[in-house]
Length: 222
Image (cartoon, rainbow, N blue to C red; front, side, top):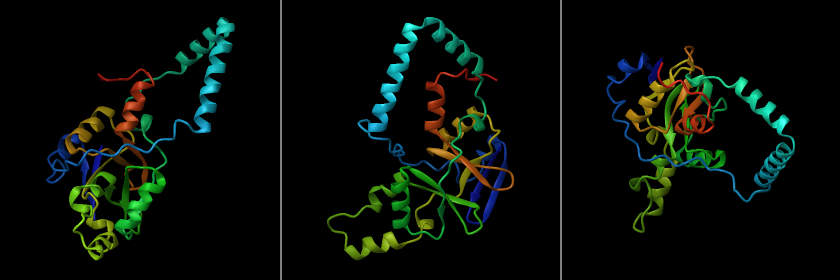
């Protein structure tokens, strides 16, 4: 089940096929999203992780029975992934509609994310701010741009830069339908919003790809 939210509230609630007929949604062809900022591969945490993995592999090599038991245990815990709840990120960063473009820039940078749902004073979804949109040529200063004009743009509300209306999805929705909507809209992800309007997570292209490369038994046919 999908919903569409804008500054006037929820505009649509229904299945994917009906949502694709909603005016304005299919025209959300965005610029390519900026990948989420990752950790520095040279960081000590990453190095420690690699050393722990190497130590574990070495221990398994000396104890093949234990290694086999671990594989069997892992297989027994595997399950099909076919719903949004199986792959979504449950920690979601939201941006206030009262924020300025400059505050939006800073928020995305500080959290290391490429997009954030925008909510009103009641916490209801009204749009989504994309770093890719802020980086569009018409929004960036040129050598001929007057400093005051650039400052005026940064002082504007995020309402002037966000995507709206924006589709959202419920946590029990089929992952294939989510993938279809992401392809149709060009969005990097969708807020997960329950029937009561509460934002409970975010499902992105990265979440879908991460589920695939982690080699779970994906239910792609039914």
